[in-house]
Image (cartoon, rainbow, N blue to C red; front, side):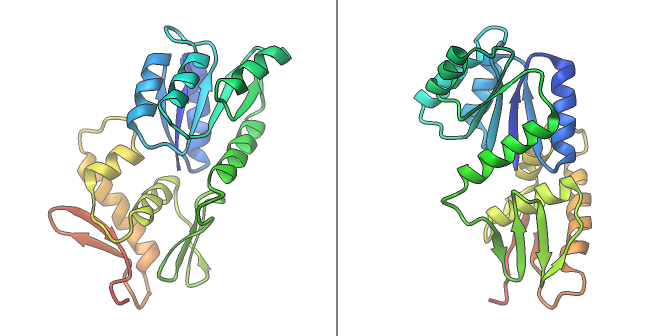
Length: 225
């Protein structure tokens, strides 16, 4: 799952991003309201964590602007303001939840999971391809009932492939979705991670699920079906 974190405090954003990535999320970071709004408008995110006080455009205005564009992505607002009127203002401008600073990371994580469960209530809670099952919220993957131990990057790659099962996903797509930093050797990086992932997913299985499409990328699907 991919999260957009909009926080101008670079130290705080690094700590939060690292914590979320260790929990299996892919995290993009923006340090201003304008940059956050632009990323949210063009990217595909499962959730946005948005600070209220931002340079340039305040988080409250960013939230309202995204809702005016019709963006339905869950938004969790972070702020040092704890007055009831402020909380009401945030919710009225389109925020789905509100967390007052300072907060414990465990509470942030719990609220994120709650919003993700709520946001995906109308979608299958578990993604399936053949005998592979992936729980995006619980970060749990099984194949034939056996739990697979995946790294955060492998889980992010697999989830993206499964969500686009049946079509070719290019290396550039995977690189953009999974790695927010620029890498000089991104193609090789993707190939190495997919190779490790394939060994875990397809090793010993009668049916191969992760397929290489030469010169294009990868496709997930049970081709025996």
